[in-house]
Length: 524
Image (cartoon, rainbow, N blue to C red; front, side, top):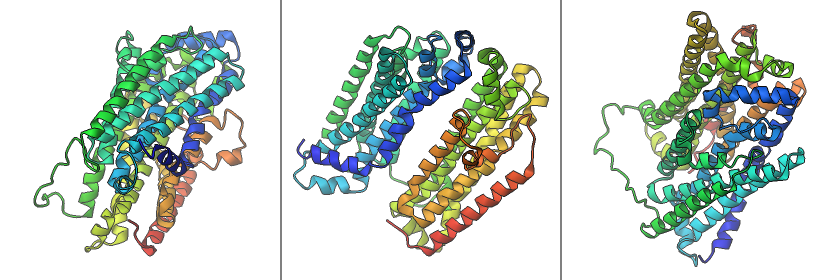
């Protein structure tokens, strides 16, 4: 373990920008929801109506978490239940970035040649990650206390976040030992996270039994502000101890730079389907494109099926109706559909940004240099990745529109009149998505070392879209988000002018980014 302290300082220095951003972004979510719920449901009767209606809406319970009471604190922590999935995601990515990704880059071997213990890197990564997870829980606790919530419930919420995050820090550490590459290690760990989410979702939508097989379900059962069950933290503590011990044991059984699962050798000659740079890009992007499309489609289908019951769930609050009306529609249900489509549109933008950043990864790993050293131009190579950043979200949003429209239309018994409006709402998100693609390409072309800063732009768009109206930000600030300028569909007024301007902005940004990339040297 020699050198662990020095490596902790190194990892903290490398994360000095990213870590505070995700700690604050996630830790302050309860504060934003507290402000929102207090304004939307000002009376106990409003909150009780919301609670009772949510209990009768399995889709909401599956997507968010189980709800245990009508107390304002219970409602806020229920709505913030998605953090029980987002914090583990951040933990997995952080652990693998400081372990498996460091080995892929050759830095672990270089550091290991000095007076550093064999497990120092793994220990330092876990210390940093668990420290960030616990800090996120503390920020969440403080944000609730600052709003005036009870001390015990606030601490329970922070403990729930810290518990599930620590478990998946261990899962990420195990995956880092198994995967032969960082990308595969992330895939293994994220698969475990997806299974845990599915078990929790299916369990909470039904009898609740399956959710006890999921670490996410354990943290949800801590029940902040609703007769807290502190004993469930022992389940998370035990699982974290087992996964971390397993990671340490597996680290002893492998060499640095290799995984317990060996790399599969490719064919001796290129397959007939691999005939050019676009075919290569297809092989690189097809897995993530399929996963995002299916995931967003399922998400849209579940939310669409819940649309018909939204009136009962949201009650007769005028504040709720006013908040949803900002998303468009001529009725509460149409406004709800418009709101969920806008959220899914931002998720599609996240996929598009990740497709652009795949080009950044290929350049950093020096793979791009091998491709463009042949008869492939730099812009053509970049265009092969941009094809999926532009067309991929279009396919995903088409599936989203069909899935949400069919389930919503089936619920109201009129698919023919509902489907076109929902499909139009989904496809109208694309110009805003492409603007974020343009921002990512500009950063990639001008400042490749800062390409990943585009995620801060995406986070800013999320905050502006989801809480900007609630906390009363000026319209000039809200207009910064490209999603502010998409038509308010279904049911709202459609104008092609804002879409044309948004598409033009996206085209200009992509062209500028490509020109900047063409003029600079490759990294890696």
